[in-house]
Image: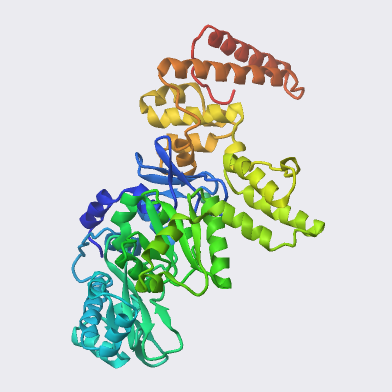
Amino acid sequence: MIATDAIEGLKARLDIVDVVGNYVELRKAGTNFKGVCPFHDEKTPSFVVSPHKQIYHCFGCGAGGDSIKFIMEHDKLNYPEAIEKLAAQYNYTLTYTQGSHQKTDTKIIDTLNLWYQSLLEQHPQAKAYLQERGIYSSSIERFGIGYAPGSKETLSYLQSNLFNMNDAIALGVVGKGENNLYARFIERITFPIYATNGTTVGFGGRTISGHSAKYVNSPQSKLFNKSRLLYAYHQARDAIYKKKEIIVTEGYLDVIMLHQAGFDTAVATLGTALTSEHLPLLRKGDPRIIMAYDGDNAGISAALKAAKLLSSAGFDGGVVIFSQGRDPADMVKNAHIEELNTLFRSAQPFIEFTLQHILQQYRLSNPKEKEQAMHEGVGYLKTLSPLLQEEYKSYLASQLGLSPSLLKMHSQAPSPSYTATTTYGDAWERSLIKTAVEHPEYLNIIVDSLSSSLLQHHAHELELVLQGNLNDPAVMSILMDERNPPFHDAAHLHDNLIFFLRNHYEKMLKKVKFQHELSLDRKSFLIRSYRHKIEKLKRGELIPYEGHL
Ligand SMILES: [Zn+2]
């Protein structure tokens, strides 16, 4: 088992904004951060992270908890697995109580990486390939390029170093067939893939023995999620922050060659399209994004998807298409640096690029198709902020040769989870619950003057607070909602309680008058009691709650 003090030590190091920020794009909203919930499908952010309380909460689906809970839920891990994952991510060494199972030995992958690098020297064919592509030896070193030999050699290397084969399988460097083990990378040039903190998490491999798969990547593993990582981000990070720019390409060689030519903000997706899972990483340092894609059909459709995704998510930047079979790597090799510079500087802004490619799919000379083009264009614009919608409405209209007034824009409806809860009574009860949590010194006043059963919307939550269940998702939801502040002092609470209770007893009084099934005695007793309470409340006196009369 993981030692308790090790868990506590790790917890003290974790910052929820950073932990969640690796998965969810977070933006500052008051004292909290807000993003789109990873646990349910939503367009408008209702997922809130509180750095102060070190918890997250989703107003849409009710998910909530601390950093460890987040990793458990998000990555479907159990408690110790989540802790091990976080410890690996934050370079924290866990200690274990004696005799228990040890964590996966991530040293395997670092050791293999160094071994692959040392093998490159002894492999002239691999070296010749790199040289032919124009890669300097300084780049080989900087990017840790290596060579993976045959399967048997890799397996015996791991065995002779006494590594645990199950760990090697878990890390994706060894695969398991029906009745044998095999190395994942066989006779390939290896490009180590680092996590943002610089630890090796996987490899990309390019064949030099004519294997049908030109490139392969490590499989998804505990450490390696290719739709969240970007190749060479670790090497490019400082430049990205400094230059406020990031160039996203499609290939390892493009990245290495671009860095060689001084474009040191270049990174690459890992053989996948750009997905929303990449956005948190791209958001870091708030850079302008240049997507560099091949000019073939696959490249253009990938660029279109990326441009839509990035513009809808509010990113600034543009697209560069390398037409006529050119690619960044070859352009650097052929010393076309100035041309590259010009290309990157004149990237076509995402929104223009998207609209242009949407319209290109239609024959605009045909009115019916023109109408469809307009609908698709407007549909896309609606994913943007109201200001950008307005800006690009006339651009789209002019491209279609239509009057802007024909383009019907409706801004997005706000998230239902945020609008459904805005009645006065609801807001008041939320403020009351917040007061009870944030000012426990007022709890007595609250408990004395009312019962949770008097609340119409949040009786359950008040009950939870009274029981001390502050970590219940329902309570957290109220605590993290910034719209309903707590009552600011005892006098404010007092006035609010008077107002609420007067309302309540006046309602009860009206109700009792129509309760024909009550005996006359009972009825007059209730009427007297309610009137008495209302009188006192009118005088500003808080009366003790007497339960059901
Ligand atoms: Zn949610």
